[in-house]
Length: 95
Image 1: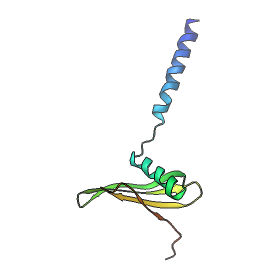
Image 2: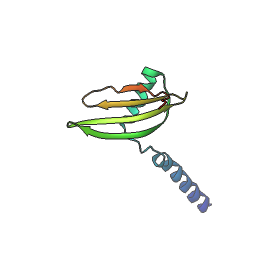
Image 3: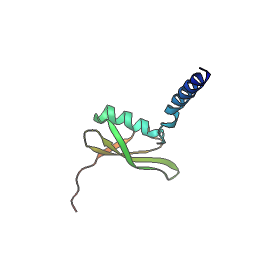
Image 4: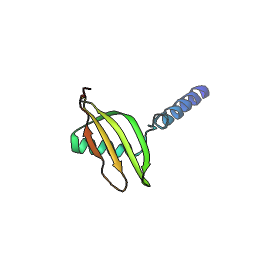
């Protein structure tokens, strides 16, 4: 009986730590991009590509491409001190 309780306790402890292991490693500012895209463009973000943070003339810059569930893609950009991201719909380009 003692082994069953210990095994149960170990399983519960492992289950309790799973959410911490599954947390995203994406930068926190991507949450703001997701919220703004949902509000402004009705885009539910599936994933991001080309995530970049940089600096321009002493101001922090943030850029990423968002893939929406409906297949659209948006380039998002923001330069501090701006609070909102600007979005540009990515379209097929022919060279």
